[in-house]
Length: 445
Image 1 (tube, rainbow, N blue to C red):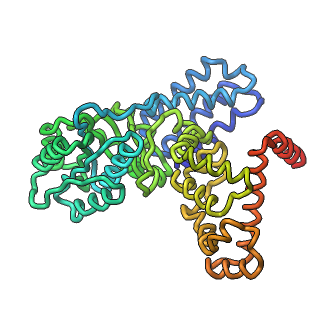
Image 2: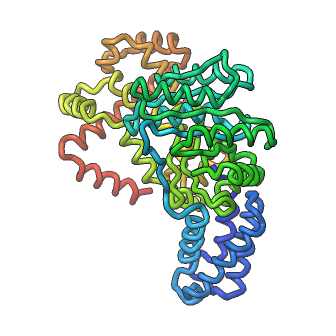
Image 3: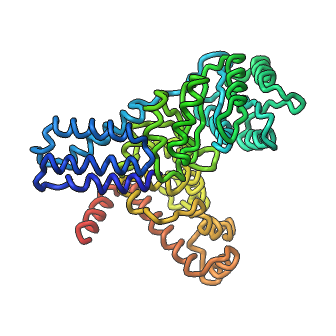
């Protein structure tokens, strides 16, 4: 996410890092490089110029030239300006009304139907709502089928009428069904086109006028760069939508759309899509995104994702097993499943400060745990509960059953043993001792 932009901004700000002599010329050169980085990321020229002018003005106004650490102050100024450029504060979704009606709009191929499912799943699991998906795309082949598949995948009902070609009538019927059957959120998936045209705009405008949604969201493919911003403006002129959804942000190396769309349409980015899974949806926080762009990571979001998957009762059970030295591979497998639910592995690693740069050019497979899972599933229940029973012949059988090498089985057992010992130390009040050991190891290194 934003790899290219992050790298170029890092180079631009490198000039002012450290304690060397800083001049107005240095600041001017740095802001020039920042502007170039933004333009390469497909940010509108006017927006990029205004941005760097503000950065330069603040930098010179805050005595960057005389501070002991001018580089750090410059990074803070750029971070604050990026945050403001992307909206400043996060804005939630409007769920007033009974039911709350959410109208999804956007071009074909932007990921609108998939994101409708992600949003329904988000509202169902995190807001404890009962959503209904309504299929109003009567043109694209298999669009209705796609929404039904998505609905089945997340356990959300889908309303459709294959005999009706009037999207306004379908939308009204879907809302009537929601009122009659106790659904408190209605998400209406509308048709998209390959480009903005009059017929499309008339249709979406008619639907909007007929149902008066509490929330109208514009879904845009972030990989289309500045075209995404131009399309957003065209839709906003007709719909006056409430917020923007940026999809496919995990594959976007430029990021210009995310940075400049708020300045053009003056509407907040409310959610982002960061992967193919139905759980790959995040509330958009401008400040956190600015941190990520500048290579500072996003620990807050990482902790929030972990908390969402944290099962307090399960944690207590594992705590007791660790105390009794009965933590086995079934428990380990359970922990892996929770980590996998947190999202895309490279995205998670990128939330750790400094890891974004370290991971550049490295591809982390989403199925990074599949070899470990295969080895564990090749064990008998007794072996998973009692790893100490794994002798050489059993290891050979497990390796053959999982399609791996015996060395990999040995490596997993060694790592599992080390992890178990560490958890035991933390459990038994040995936290201080472990920290001392870690401090000593760091000193030696």
